[in-house]
Image 1: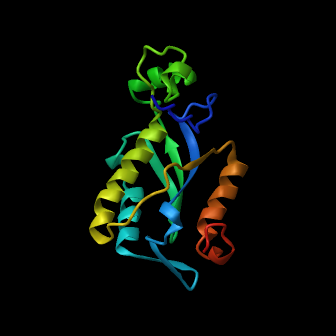
Image 2: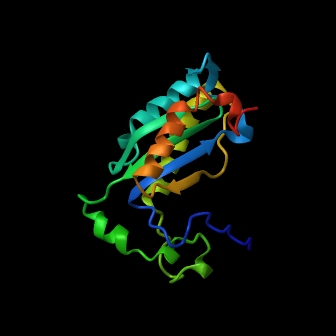
Length: 180
């Protein structure tokens, strides 16, 4: 049997509530989403699909809000807010042991229990899947990187710095680490 991969998520963090800065790239950083034109993003048809999906997060999960995002040629950045306070699942989400999230059953707190998948992971998988389904109609080679980067937004200063980065990302494209 193959050894299941280790989860990239922090074991101590609850990914079922809070505010996160998320970045996800296209496979091999291919600019499927469009190009930067005079400091503005010019969306391709695939870019229009991801833009629509990010502006309608409720299509994938009712507890997700995305107050700010940017679509770049080969990646996206988004602030994702997960609010479970008003839902019946909220108490359950807060009390699931973080060690139960490991994809490897032998490393879970209780190997007999089903793996708990946090809301952020569910949303990202659903959104990426929806974009891929439609994007392959335009380009059969479309794909995402296997994982995504997340950062818990800790306070207002952190949030403001991230928001500023997102808003200015198209203008600063040639200085971006994802620029080819």
